[in-house]
Image 1 (cartoon, rainbow, N blue to C red):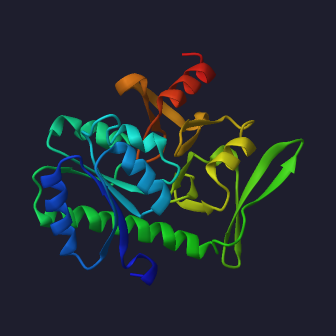
Image 2 (cartoon, rainbow, N blue to C red):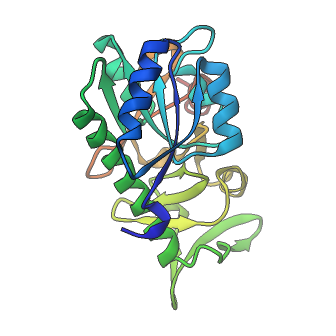
Length: 257
């Protein structure tokens, strides 16, 4: 494993002191974890995550004012998310938010280690893609009549020309954008905001702060919690992407449903 991901920078949030003390002790026993911030409620968690930009956020779901599920849509920095809760009825909704894992309290240290190992592996994969694509290179575009014809991703001395029509969706993780064509992930240097603007005429819609979806590759849409939708993509994995409330409204308007 590379040095860049040998130690995970972590922020955790829990409104209960005994839970914070137990988690602090468990994490102190792990050499690969660097706890950079501890929050006692959702508002503190938002502030710490945006300021410290950790790799991973360990969030209790039930917190006053802003809970662990709600605060994710309010973040400017998007870390990998692991949820904790004493109530297993939140499991489905936790995974709706594309979390790395879900821990049911009280969880042993072995279960916590397993969840963090998954986060570390996912982060390593993301960084490997970025390195292969020479992350310093900006994605380039061929423009004709203000329409995005090709999205170009560089990998060493190779250049991949991606047709927007072939892209299933684009996701943002750890501040990086990845285009999914059904076979592989392609790192893009532009932000999701920039790509949303560039692809606005190509049937792409922003369904969530982390997802830009090609509507031509949507296989199914299901009604979900709190006015949101679950979008199922027509790839082999049948990828499931949750919308935000605003994203759901945008998608309904576009598809007239």
